[in-house]
Image (cartoon, rainbow over the protein chains, first blue to last red):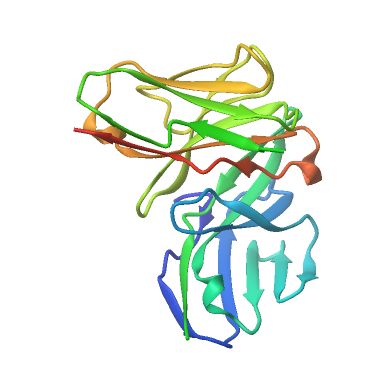
Length: 113
Length: 115
């Protein structure tokens, strides 16, 4: 079992829908949580990051962390066709002063007009 | 500010040939990483470096070598390419030791096909 589990999808939704993307993890040492967005034929780009349980909002995006359940989510409100991409969760834990990230497999999101 | 630059963008190799992928970053990041991305497998860490002159193995290091002679550059070498190394390779960099401020910044990838 991988340390970070993420459903690869694809997830297809109509424009304007609320999207929920999720990851579960098994390593209690993970302290920092990130979401990356990757468009086709591009590198991943950082979308949101947080280190505490609870919600963090940035425009149409909300990142949610539940450390007790080892579960993180990314919500996208009023989804747009331009949100169509692969979304990867990533987590950091500290080992001897170093932070090496662990990525989920990514969820492919398709928002159709 | 270019960020992370990877060269080349595309390459086709025959089995047994060798090549080097170059990654350059201009953000003064200490940490650099090489990942491969395959359909359904996500990003898998090949090797990484926590500073100039250092390297360490990641999840899938076999068949690859790396060097970090200068802080801004991280090279990935394939000594004898195999079809199983057909993939998209991403380089990334980060501050590494600042926890909350250590998100990775990625290049746009090198698409390698080994025939």
